[in-house]
Image (cartoon, rainbow, N blue to C red; front, side, top):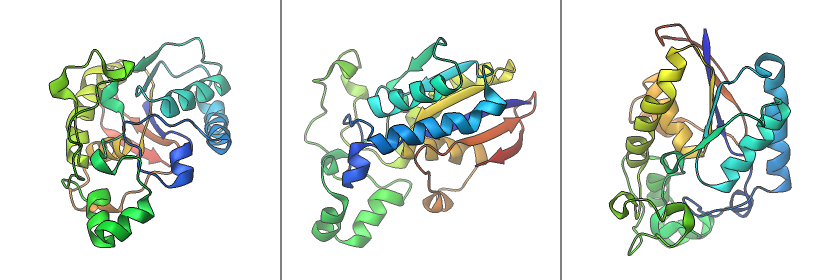
Length: 224
């Protein structure tokens, strides 16, 4: 069997402050670093030097989490693929706002719809932010101003099918370290969860989800 390990980054400063982040960069807290280290230690017995491919977003909270996990697995020498398609969903005009404050401003029901439904988009930015080095080579038409989980899924799954699945079919274990929404998108796709039922799926910080597949990529079991 071959393994796919999905990990949401450790606690970020924005998580700690209960702020919408999306494509904004936010560093790990000390707790987030410890969570990542513990995730690596939990995986060490089974996956020491046996993960062949690492994939993450272009956001430092996910990159740092990956490095800390790799360090525990003695895998720092292995390449790490970084791609914007694995970024968190774009929270549009909610970016930088406190989540509790938005419930007061927009109402709990509306905020719940934006956060948990499959196809509802938060209010959009007036224009896409292409000012940082992370995105200066990205086609402006690919840069979102707001995303639903469906939108995030539509950019994540092509990366998974193109860059991860072929290596799984070769029998090479893969790890994806990303974000709450993009991990949810992958879980939805792999487990064939309905658009409605994905609302109830939660992804904890630095808690590995391990899928094991047979040689035809049929799902055999899940842990986590």
